[in-house]
Length: 333
Image (cartoon, rainbow, N blue to C red; front, side, top):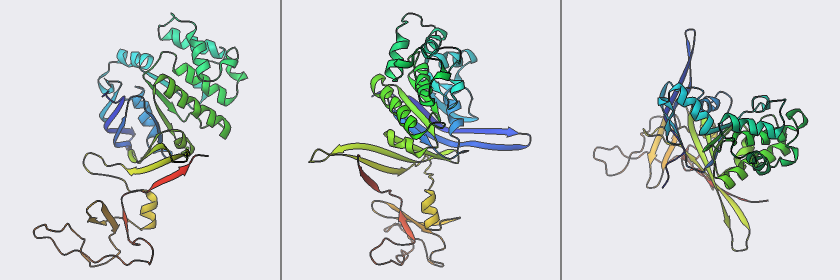
């Protein structure tokens, strides 16, 4: 079994401005297996771009550990960090001006990236990458002559110029319309499938998650939930996509409850827990004033279990909700 390509353990990043400290990452844990295609989603300010800066060796964490393709990023020398960015990771920015030189054609941009990486042995490789990303027909055009979607697909070819193990993308579809977004995401899928390149796409666009097998949500500087998707064929030959959503539990047992759960059940400050044979229940600490929280049976000295919450006929308890998330089936269009 191969080691994961990306491993983050307890990542912390604190930015200090004058006397103010901002904690962008708060003990983040993340693992991406080799050959994985993962979307990292979250609102602005959740720590997504900070994480990507660390994984691309453009920044260093305040605490914790980050390993990419077997390299401990916290232990690299300045020279090793340059070599790492040239040989191990490829990067796609949201702004095309950061990805492509405006006075070079699409093919020349890819050729330049290969030359900077020190590989001039296979001039045809640039054309092959443009073919793979679906823009071989515009190889002679400059960026200003390309659409936004074409520019980003050329940018992916540039990021792949030196055959990196890991491809990182920061909001690659942020400036694109729906059609161009679909084309760019399809290109990431093709690259992942054909080359086996591990890809991590950071975005705030929830539509991106429909194109990947795994979506990780980051909130307040920590991973909060994950959605895993798999495709199954029924007895009639129809394909169905099954999505399972999980709450992420860190090494010391911490997790973040989904915001909609907290809002609907009015969970705040303190909550009550209930241990069941196959799940843990949680409900508002103010839902039953004066009652004792239920504890596991057969524990010496334990208090009697609290009564069940009031039920609405035909529904789940209104003040308690299992932490297990539902599995949803969506037939493919």
